Image (cartoon, rainbow, N blue to C red; front, side, top):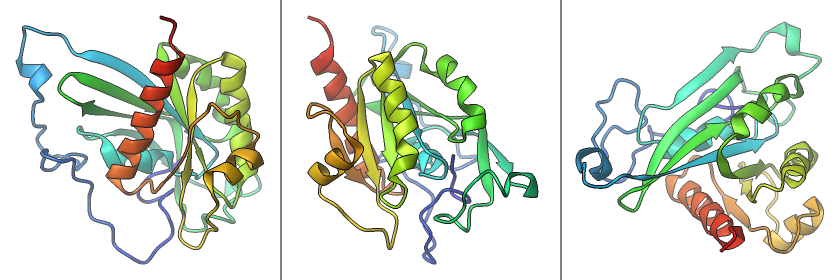
Length: 225
């Protein structure tokens, strides 16, 4: 999977730590968490939603979670070694030094009491055995795609199609990668017309929030009345 030091978009620009609107220091290790309204108002319970962030190796999942999490995200990054040289393709992400070996975890509050718990999956095939456990209780998934390696998205797409779980496709824009219209991406990935396809930059909070909102709306539309 990914992280600021591993699956970020290759660039020489120094990206500042993420800042969640109204929450100074959010996502910064060691920063004190600012309590949300649903944590201090005991008269109402928050609406908790579990969302899974999936996709191929090095597509930006850890960066996605870290960009919006209002708490210091949990990351299970391990240094990549020579043992994985013949297994993990680093052609598109040559600066990647670490990889997720379990999951990423973060939290974001939308509105006043709608709380999304984000679970990022590991991308490599050898870690797929954990996916079934990570999916339990989820209302849907964001499947991330890289236009340079669309084939890496197919396993995740097939997985959620087989589960019947609502999902959206979030095309993560890497610098230097070609841009395509959402409909072209839909055709290339053989995604059904009803599945939202959005463009985003996993480093930019606003685009990540838009992808999450698209998933929530899609899941609500598909929910039985």
